[in-house]
Image (tube, rainbow, N blue to C red; front, top):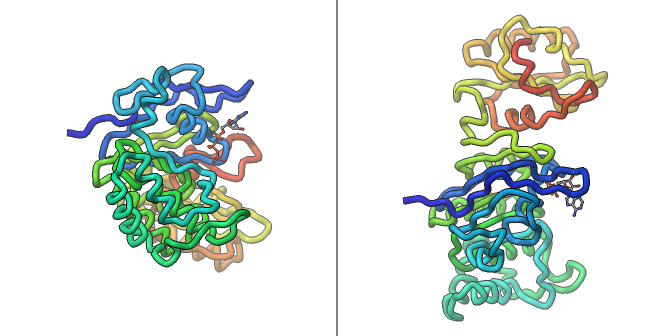
Length: 327
Ligand SMILES: Nc1ncnc2c1ncn2[C@@H]1O[C@H](COP(=O)(O)OP(=O)(O)OP(=O)(O)O)[C@@H](O)[C@H]1O
């Protein structure tokens, strides 16, 4: 039976006049990967810092593995492993020794810690750097290898709750894929995973649930399919706008559009599959008339929905949100 390894209820934290977390409720069950999304300053790190006892909430509750983490942060901390957003300090250590130390701190025997380090070196394809020493000021090991070592340290021993804060920063595309697989595997092995990321497109493939924060508030929560808010058959028409930035879709296409999101010189239109032919015909005529620079058709993605959910308000907004239902 799955159980909650993290239960956050009405969590509120202020810094002066800034409400960094405003009555946020989130749960993570064992075996579940929950993505925490939000733009810079949305309140993600503030939430994580409170879960691991680095900050005290102004109000609300945090339970980690059934322990009250606000009243007993030291006890709750035993149930959590955190890979922080900042690089883990490694100077003077090799990845192998750092991972072994992390495993020993988490209660593994020296033999099991050695085996865990070797296995993680293979899983993340960092075997060739495992015995290379990290030197001061970023010497000895690249940022990506340091980041992967930080991940391996967090997962060196099984843990009920794993918190990963931007684990894919600095990592090349091939190893990023290995890392996402490794994250999913930790969930499948029974950990609850809270994954803080900006990488919506890649996270979509590994998360069970998503929580979206925007300026301290929880603005959406649910499975990727729910948040996409569209049918699987829906399609996305992407318009590349001409340099003067005019968007002819603002004047209407003459057909229903589920969602319209503008980012810079790009507009993303989500349309039902049976309207795709009309939408493409419209886009082709706009292109032929020189009113757009180009267009493409592809499946609707979670990223489009995320951009719409977190669109800034106001007349100067560069994004147009979900209220643009029919254009
Ligand atoms: N120690 C602090 N003192 C004052 N304000 C703070 C402090 N920590 C965070 N804030 C403010 O709280 C808000 C949320 O910040 P937080 O770091 O939690 O966002 P975030 O979603 O983690 O951002 P990022 O993606 O950039 O890491 C921001 O407005 C930030 O300026």
